Length: 361
Image (cartoon, rainbow, N blue to C red; front, side):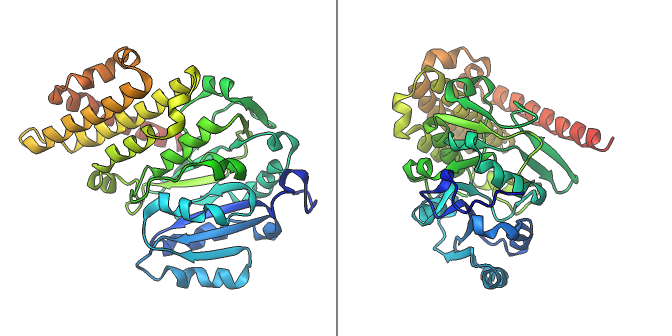
């Protein structure tokens, strides 16, 4: 059970323990599933901000019954500006000690919600700037879940200074994160107008600015991230249609002022973070490549120029040149690049098929 102390030290300077932010755009068939996954018997501990980012469907009609039932749910409508604009918009409104962002087409693990609230009030978590919580990736078509976790601990909470966090580092998404409000308020505004990847700017800033991170145990996943949904912004068809904006996202991440003064360990994280986006961008362009299309060939060349310039400026050319795959990319032999990355894509698909088979055993 969640502690009944109505005003513990960990959130005495805030009205509530937790603020849940729900960015929403044309998700009326998903929003009920999200709200149904939240245990409202603990409503005195949290608030929910549903920010309608200019939906063109009758989204409010789906939300209104929930607004009538629970005062802790607040609804705001704004002009469409995509994910980053929602976070910028809601920042001054939040009253919780902790901030959790849940996309409107995802859910939470209902049974773990009370335990999660209790962890947020614990003495160890009080000392942290950021909380890392395991999450489930739910494959809708294939009908199986995969657990995403740092696997540092099976029981209890582990506190980690940033320097030790580097040794366990892998690419972090916002699904992992619960952010202390004080840290959240210091973040510079996120880029607006992108249908995907603005969350990378949020995640990167949080990791760079946090001093202490709390890892919750792997048996307490909270977030359920739905994939294989053709309507979501991260669906391959939508990414392909908006692939050119990936360059803008890399530019925005590279221009965050804090990057200019980071230490050696954090610079390594910056390199891994941007490198992963670099690979992904080249992969997307490679899948769309046609050897007879001169324009597409020029697209890949321009992409490589922009991304490599940003990476070398921030992490150093000597680090880049030591990576064989990046060295290959920078040679700009488009046919070889496309060949390699299509092999990578096929390997990823095989890995997915293997995971599905193992989950059914």
